[in-house]
Length: 131
Image (cartoon, rainbow, N blue to C red):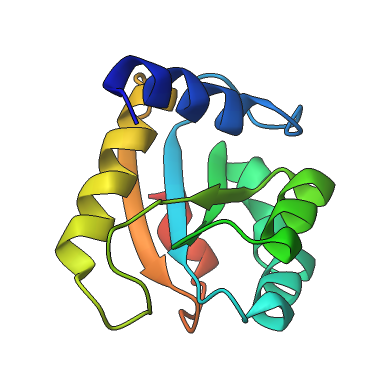
């Protein structure tokens, strides 16, 4: 995809369906998630993702590629970002996935103080967001 088109698509992906996301959050967290981990993503939404807004933090689930199920989930929740990485599967080429995420996050939220990536088996520590 042409770089300019991809950036426009990136920005649209972050801004659509997510009215509660501040345009200049303090922090941004990307959760690397397997395509078939919808149950984990639902559990995150019901638990620590609810608290992110209290700390002026935006959360996004990061998946490798688009599918009908992922598209429906993204439309329903507005918190899924598709990396479009060349390599599929959780253990494959983390460096590329990290670079894609950090570039996208910095582009979408240029004034955020920090950007992080965690895995979908991460345990949320609420006090860490306060510091």
